[in-house]
Structure formats: structure tokens, C-alpha cells
Length: 339
Image (cartoon, rainbow, N blue to C red; front, top):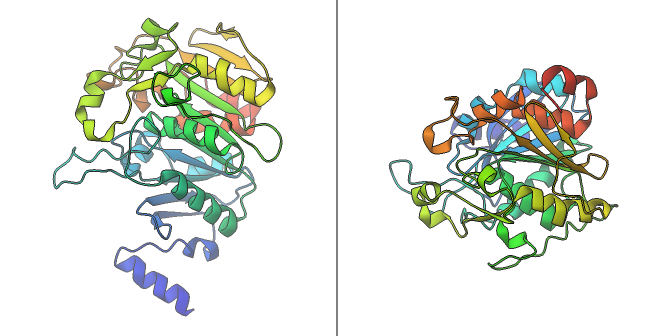
């Protein structure tokens, strides 16, 4: 048709055609897709079947979607294994220049500022994916600053967009803390149908970026980002304080999801993890034990980078998130060193 011919011509000159996915036969991969009115591009891995819905993964501060896809070993095979659409958007930056790393590609989450309406973009992306692909469920996941954005979305949109959330080394901004010393934002997770969605948060005790390190400040309500991290792109940061993930479970996720107030002590412990759980294991914090000196990360991100998390969890972050979100018990035991 003329519409498809026009779209193919646009693709040849590097312009995105999000509607092309509607009529393509799965499985397929689409790159650099766009949503009208937003500068963000995104990649899609569409398996033969999407019976388990779709998962959007947000990269961390300074991230490039293609690099994150490589770190996560994202592929059609992985999408097929979970019967789940995988989507990787590109964050934006307030500052531009000709030579990297002066673009801090990120998300506006009350910790960093991308200069864009990222909530509006995610709303539009969800609307497009649900309408064009008839997805029954959509999940939001993210690493580092992407995880902080997932926390914002949970607090501010509840279940209106997503059916479940997972964040890795990305606690909420301190603005959501009960005793925030900065500007306070309400975390209501207002949900149209029942309680707010399930939330799994993973952090490493020896993360040198977030908490610097959480193990040293485990009893503090607020964690700080490392000064080195902030100094790399100070123009992008609006706040360097985060809410301790365990306090977030106690103050926000468990009370809002099921009216529980869990203790700040682990409910389960393995050789690799301490697990803090509430609401019948639908509000969970998993804390990774172990030193950050195994060489999986550069010194500046010791205990924080994706390879470190994947090594200590015993599987890929996408596998870990997908199996928890969908409750694939057999996959949990076979693919991951779960609790």
C-alpha cells in the first residue's frame, strides 16, 4: 500500500515508522522507532507470541540503548523464551555537544533531569504498544536511573499504565520519603483497579554509586549518590539523595499495596541474597551480598554495573525480571539463582 511504501522510504532515510509493526509478521526486531511529539527513540524485540505481555527496560544515567541491550544480552531468542515483547527506549539529555561523554542521557525522576516529559513519553509509548499490539499486560523495569524512573512511575501512575515493576540499583528519589528534607512529593500509587501493582527492587550492599555503599548506611533513611557520579554531569542532577530501598518497602510499597508495615529485617536469606518481603511476596526487596572487587565493573561503578548484578543473581536481569513478573516458577528455578 501507499502507506507502507511511504514508511519504507522513511526508514531508508533514517526516519521511524512506529505503525509498521502493526502489519509485520512476528518474530521481528525494529530499531529506532518513534512516537509523534517526543524525541525518544526505542527498539522492539517482538517474539512469535506475546502471551506474557511486554516489558519496557529503562537504561541508567548516561546510557545508550544499544549498549544496554548488549549488556543484557537482549535478543529475539530471549523474547521467545518468555513469550514477551521487549522494548528499550533511549533517554534524553539537557546538554548537547559534539564529543561524549557530555550528554547525560537519562530520565526525569527527581534525581536527574533529562529536559523532557518522560512521563508523557511513557504514557504515549504504552498507549501505542497496547493499541497496536493488543498486549494484555505491560511491565516497567530499569537499571540505576532507569530504576529511579520506574519508582516515580509506580508512585505517580499506579496501575494505570503498568501491571508490575522491577528496578535494579535504582531506589526512589528522596522526595518520596516520609521525612524528606528536600521538596516532598506524594507517593500514592493511585490505582483504578484494586491495589497498586507488584514491585521488586534489587540493590547491592556494596554498590559504590547508590548509597556509597548501602551496607555502610543500611540504617539510614536516605542514601546519597557518590560525589564522583554527580560530578560527571552536574548539570543533569537535581538531587543526590535517595530513599533507602528497605525504607521504601516499609513506608510506601507494602502499606499502599496491602496495608502491611513489614519490619526492616530479612524474611529470607541465602548465600547470595537477603530478601525483604511483604504482601504475599508481591512487594519485595532483594539485597545482593558479596564484595564489589570481582572485576566485573570499572572502579567508578563497582557493585553497580549490569554485569555485576547478573553475575551475583545467577542470570540475566531480563530473565530475572520476567520470571518474577510472570510467576514462571520453572524458569525461576532453572534460569536464576533465586531465593
